[in-house]
Image (cartoon, rainbow, N blue to C red):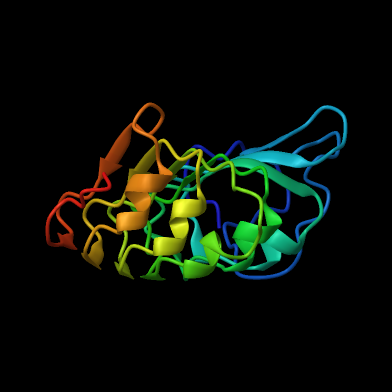
Length: 193
């Protein structure tokens, strides 16, 4: 549903739910609100649906749709958007540089598989899940993200310790921000950091 006054009123097929079905035609001449396409191949490069009263769950379906060559996704501040982080997103979106799901109802654990599914490094530069009910520990496998510059997990239910492997993976000359305030992370900063 489009209860938000920011919707432009076009009848574009976006119903506010990401729970199922395959999106078709987002890059046609009419376009869809909040989706940006590349000029050549007709692939969706960016989704920006911040504060649009989205409801439903994150789905594997977005990753299986060939029209999505995602560079950035920002669906922050949609309190009724839930589900868990789909394992398939890591392998499917080899170009994803920014994922922001701040202030949503996305829950579950941080997928260990996001660091183990493919052999080449993921170009993810920024990940923000702050103010969302994600839980569990920080996956060692995420050390494979050698381009990461910013990770924000504040005000989540993340617990455990800081992985030693992260200190070796993220060079201090490129990694800029790690925000873990108001989590249950404990212990000391590893020597590798």
